[in-house]
Length: 517
Image 1 (tube, rainbow, N blue to C red):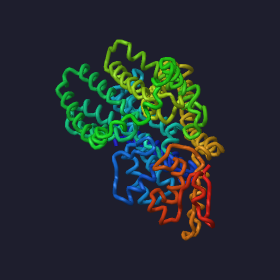
Image 2 (image 1 turned 90 degrees about the vertical axis):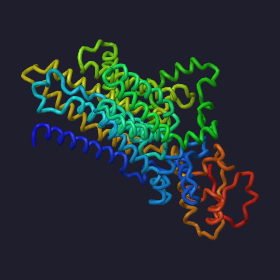
Image 3 (image 1 turned 135 degrees about the horizontal axis):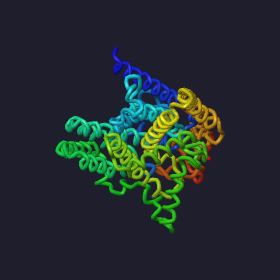
Image 4 (image 1 turned 135 degrees about the vertical axis):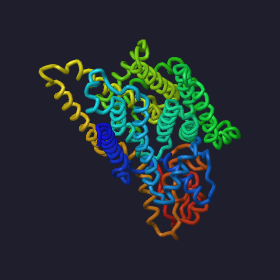
């Protein structure tokens, strides 16, 4: 095997190790953690169970403020295979989470494809991993060991699909633009991007990002403008085809397009500009100062980035800003400028749905689509810092500093997965607040009902408040999923019924009763 083959094999092994770590942190003990089942997750499951029973699979499910149907329908396939268990809903998120880690690797590698070596490495190029692969591997490793991404990769929320689709769509699009294979990559990137519209409402801000990518490429590459136009046309056609079923639904039901956006919009507040500024500061601060306080989303109040990762993210941001405003002198500078514009545009655009909302800021879930550009910038910053220190102090005491720097970097990288495990499974997983955040007591009620004799009438009294779904408050969804009693037909079959406090007088004597508080 030649040097090029050995480098590829080594990079493949490192990538495989990263994916194994990502898979372990996302799938380990998924049957028990998170505990319980939050009603929003259960609502997905109940819609899926109903679709399984009736065969009426939808592109949009209107309950619970409306949700795109793709994720729920995939969850339905999982339920058909594994049964109506909480982990059957969450294993879908696990898969999307792992594939997003892989997508970040390929996207980062493509973004920095011409950034192969530093000046210092050109004499020893055969002994090293190309610089763009270093950035890609580090970016993938950082997202693989991120509590922020691990957490949402283990919860049955459709939002986990948004970073997956955007990452892979951008990768295939850039690959097509660079190789001028306008038909193949135009079709693939268009379909992937269009399917992303079926993921999460925040994704609907991304067409502006796509226009920026095409615009920058068009003006920067005069020699391939015809191919750029062709891939744009193919991309647009197949994006629209993938979006068409959902788009048709929105045409017939325009109120569903915005969902709760108008309800929680900052522009509905008394001081919109002040709140917009505060929301922006809080969102920026969540990376290294104060994060989401919701235990369902985060270790309450902790920054979304582990502080060393937050540091190299800041370095990546600063170095990218320099790259944007510095006059490019060579392909290396042009690559940094182009990639920096894409990453900053992505961050700015996908942050809009977060900062214009006026609910729960900082909000880790609503910010989930920011994860890929954040960790690619962190990967860029980490590699840049390492190369700078190695080259600047490289000759210090016969290379002693280089050995120290390499050893310290390896120790840090080995530490990250253990820190991620400790944060998620120990600090967060064993905190008593997490039980309440995922309605663990509701699951216990559902399991108790399943163990009772089927012939005995069982009544669930819902004292807890929440948005109503077919006349019954949302908190009941968890019990309904565990017992498979979402529809009236199933309730009769299982002899399990749901009543409001005002309907207690309708409960026959001798019935079993339990209360959802």
